[in-house]
Image (cartoon, rainbow, N blue to C red):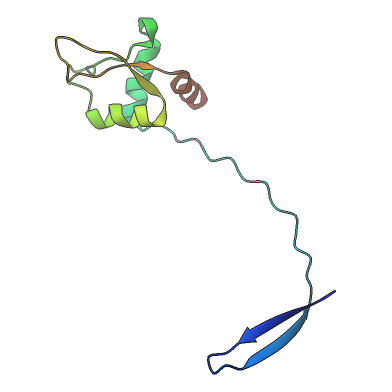
Amino acid sequence: MRATLNVRYRDGGVDALEREAVALPAPIAPIAPIAPKPSPPQRRWLTRGLRQPGSKLPLFDEDGQLINRRTVAACIKAGWAEPWQRNPIKPDWLVCKLTADGRAVLGRMQ
């Protein structure tokens, strides 16, 4: 099978190019996106939720420092954690719990 391609030039000229039609290969199935991995601080925080009742994630690290807001926000955005309850005493503290996706990503890393 032959195909014709018309090429237009700036000066108004037109050339007709004839080529043998080439069969295109079958489309490739899309590759599933690689699931992101938590960073070491995120992994430490999420792992601590495995040992807590209701999968509650701690507000403080092992040294008593408040967990970095960026760590919490990144885990919520990735779906590994979700907001759980409001803290009436400290409304700026975000209490979260581990999600099923969070458990799954931790399980894949072991």
